[in-house]
Length: 329
Image 1: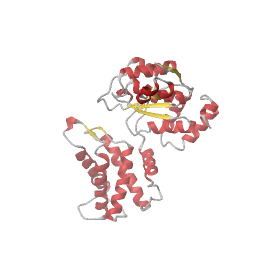
Image 2: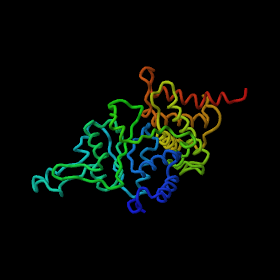
Image 3: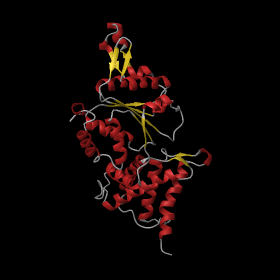
Image 4: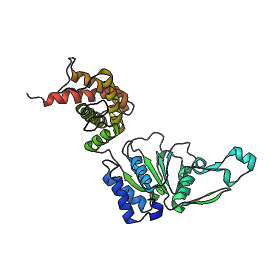
């Protein structure tokens, strides 16, 4: 059922959408309620949080449930007002002159005409004049384009921005007028249990195992991938660690490496220097972590270290130091 046919503020419809979304979005019940309430109330919203915290997942799910377009735009210095609004096709203008038929809608105009969500990632990287164009659309729910006239937004049109609070390279400080027109929601990382469920779901390494992966090995892969990835966020030398996407990739890459090496058991206990199944398994996890996490890990420049060294330390702490501390005696 389309939201256009029921109305944004139809309480029974919003409740049904919430129930359906709860089965698709893992570990984000409160945030889902808040975003859904804001857009159902007719408000635009700014989502602030590190990558991989389900911002676009929540919005895509809402748009799909409501049957409206999800228009994604990457915020950067090249996102000019003309790119946002659209323009006439130059080749057709030469043949036909300026006509409505040869105007190519930009993402803002498309979202307004079709009543969709305009989702702008890295919102604070867009130039000031582009943000001013958005402010007009937010305040008036319409924009005026030379030779085209006034475009009025459909009732379901929303502008939603996202920002990463840990990244200040190439960003600009948003003005008071921008903040005043947005609702704002801060999203942090999910807890360990939620990330475990996400990785199991996205990789297919659930309780019953996955393709060519026995259940015990699948469980170990998910547990270790989540633990190592979460540790990158807490290490003293990191400025920003990896999102759950890193854990997903780590588990998938490690599963392929284990298949290549013919290893079907994770072993038990601490890692030693001997060539044991536990040692071979741990070495595969380290290799997979270097591939999957090193590019997502941003170290503090003052620490004088590298992502690879940080991952080596995290691996040793997880596979050697902690198991050893837990042993009797």
